[in-house]
Image 1 (cartoon, helix red, strand yellow):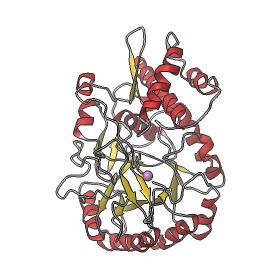
Image 2 (cartoon, protein in one colour):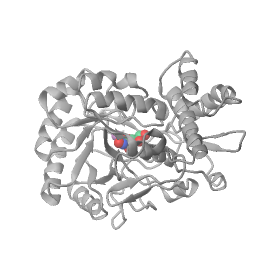
Image 3 (tube, helix red, strand yellow):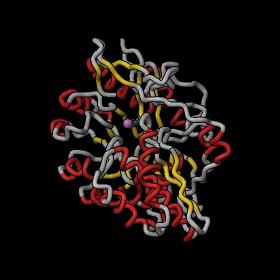
Length: 403
Ligand code: EZ4
Ligand code: CO
């Protein structure tokens, strides 16, 4: 879902508005409630427009509202950059670093395959890799394509050949969500063995990450974080669902494995306690899902006060427009940590011409005015909308679990 805002002078800006699986709700929110309020407003009043949409609606926060606000906000920053003739990172305060450390997604049906895939990422220049592997006895676990990894493909090449790789799900045949399964016991056994093997095969220099994808109970998360300590992870992500923020105290009491959380957060208020109480090390809110540059900038400053660093969500269900904006933000933000990077498909990249690039383990935003990502509407028209939902997860006995 992409928002395009045009000004009377003919300038335009783009904002990502993708809320995977609930995208039409954002489209309706924008078309029916936001756009009528934007017509005739001064596109330069970015702050006032943000406050107008957030405070003025009476109904605050939530994924639909904050994604819609983010789309407007990023489009307005894009316009400002184009009118000023400056790339977005310069509007934010200028360059803090030469490149943005990126991590890719390696995976495999077993430890052997996952380690070989990790090796391919290292060969492709990655300095940080998130690794997931199949779990014995479990059908379709998170983060592992059922076809296994695609041998011989070049991870990180700008033209992605690994459609959806690492997301752990293939598009469903029907509009109903795919079903995946979850069982903590075999998972807690295999993951420490996976990382033991990765350190043995690939040494101590490569940064390794892992995503538990909200599956663990607090005490299971504490155990995993503790068992992973010898392998010095860069982070353990989404160890337990973060609605229950006190759960993170229990994890902290048992482990010094760094923790990352927040790809499903929508505002400062979702992470305020976790940051203030120093229960996390990295905050993962995406610009598209947390109110845009205007809000995430405040959140990052608040995080900096508590020595929490950024590590933005960057899966393929965030569009290249979000990635472009994130890379400008990452280039500026003083407390940058890392940026997730899953290359988009060739079709997606054809629709979104862009000037960011991956080189030698780092992502680099370009110097084009604004966020540097455009849309080819004729190419986009060749790919009509077809509804898809994210998968769901069930326990072996059929009960619903967290995906
Ligand atoms: O499952 O973006 O860290 N990355 C992730 C992603 C998410 C998808 C869900 O929309 O967890 O792959
Ligand atoms: Co994640």
